[in-house]
Length: 219
Image 1 (tube, rainbow, N blue to C red):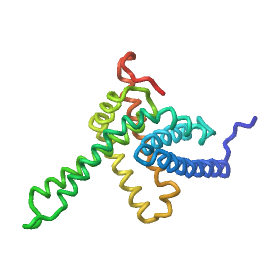
Image 2: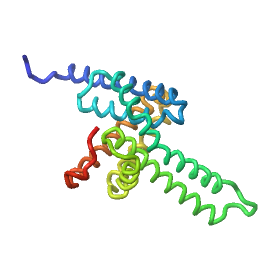
Image 3: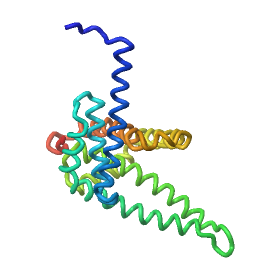
C-alpha cells in the first residue's frame, strides 16, 4: 500500500465528506429534538450529536446515523435529567430578564439596570455550564449530581476555555446572522462541534490530574 500523503485533492475530498457529515448531524439533531417534542428532545439530541461529532473528528466512525440513534436512545433519560436544571434556570432567567426590561413609571431605574446585567451574566454562565454538561454526558458515565457539579465548576476553573467558548459562539452568531441559510444546514452541528472540542480537551486534562479511583468512567 502507498502511505504517501493524499495531496490536495484527497484532502479536499476529506473536507467535503466531513462537511456532508456535519449537515447530516444537523438534520439528525433537528429530528431528535422533534422526536422528543423539543422539551424532551434537545438535550438527548445534543448529547448524541456531540458524541458523533467527536468520533468524526477522531476518525472513529463511519456510521453517523447508527451511532447517533444508539447514543440518543441509551442516554435519553440521563440527558433529560441533567438538562432539567438548565430548563429551570432558563425559565428563571427569562422571567428576570422580562422584569428588568419592563419599563416603570419613572423610566429606567438603577435597579432594573443591575438586574439586567446580572441576568446577562447568569445567562452566560448557564450557557457555559450547559455546553459543558452536554459534552460531559456524552464523554463520561457519571451520576446526574456529579455531572451538574462538574458542568458548573468546569467553566469557573477554566477561564481560558470559558472565554474561548463565548468568543466562538459570538463569532458563529455573527456568521449565522449574516448568512442565515447556514442555520438549517449546520446551525447546531458547528456550535456543538466547537463546544465539544474545547470542553472535552479541558476536561480530559483536569480529569487526568485526579487520582485513578476518583475519575469518571469514559463512556
